[in-house]
Length: 390
Ligand SMILES: Nc1nc2c(c(=O)[nH]1)N[C@H]1C(S)=C(S)[C@@H](COP(=O)(O)OP(=O)(O)OC[C@H]3O[C@@H](n4cnc5c(N)ncnc54)[C@H](O)[C@@H]3O)O[C@H]1N2
Ligand code: MOO
Image 1 (cartoon, rainbow, N blue to C red):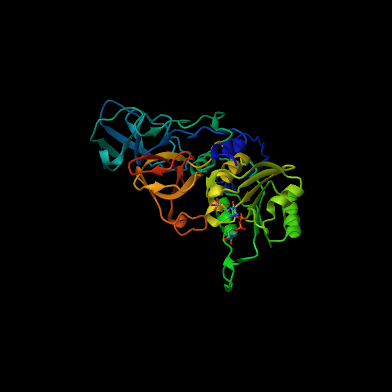
Image 2: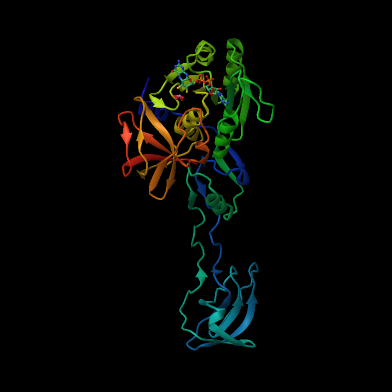
């Protein structure tokens, strides 16, 4: 058995060069730029009014003659003389001859003449050309995640396609004779299958859309065949269950018979002790323990950082922080533990129901508290490492 940090280090040392593709910006949410983006235009492209009011060619007095009206979207550029102005609206092109914009609240207007009620100075309420970015400058760099703001920013530069790293093709294989599809009648000895939909949801949060699902009974040959099929067509294979030591746990044997290189198997942790990580040709395989909470915790701690790497992301996993504990917790055994918890402000509370089979508190948890191997009891007021769940 290896430690949590050894397992994480094995994953972080893997080098993986993702492929790239050009896609529509509207489909790029959460994906990672594979090339720098250069601005094709100045932004803003012209001097823009930031307010509704009057564009003025300043003189020394406080009255101006208004000779034109400029609505946003028009290309009017009236030749203003000192003492003249134009009615103007937010977003409209400021005439070349205008020095300033005075907002309408600071003005009284009688027909085509205005009187300024306040002091004004040059360049007020004008957004200069290329204030945000100049044509040819780098707008976003390779490795940037396309958040809603990043997508909005580059759409505003007129860009509608981007080069991104291709997200991995992922297969999820669910093993177990005891598993029934939710929505069907529960019969004696069976339980509802929940790991596949849970993993699917966690992957969809990363905007992974190409997910193939396989179901297999606890039978050696079919387990081997399905794993082999999944390895051929996917970058990452996630297997749920059948990875422990029972007589009907065939996953490790099947992986080994298929020539899979074992990168690690079994971590000194709870939940998720029998996690397997390996490589078969170009495909990486995680065999996750079947217990639902073990499966999800192994996903968040080990699979997620690896998936992010295959997407070209700079981030290497969930955000870790330190919080003040409100509860006491005493460990049984000497494995490191990831405990379902709730964070509010600076405090974190460890929840009930920590068993690997239990999801009822995981469903309302927003964090995991990490208790290292060498720590037995943690007490209220202690600072604990806390992993924030997405
Ligand atoms: N003698 C030992 N027994 C076990 C050990 C051990 O070291 N020695 N390790 C235990 C630990 S820790 C874990 S974790 C489990 C992992 O077992 P498997 O990965 O082989 O998982 P299964 O046996 O297939 O299932 C375990 C449990 O989870 C339920 N399950 C499985 N798949 C699903 C699913 N898709 N949806 C919902 N629930 C699922 C399954 O019914 C079992 O209750 O092994 C311990 N045993
Ligand atoms: O390590 Mo297992 O995941 O406790 O139940």
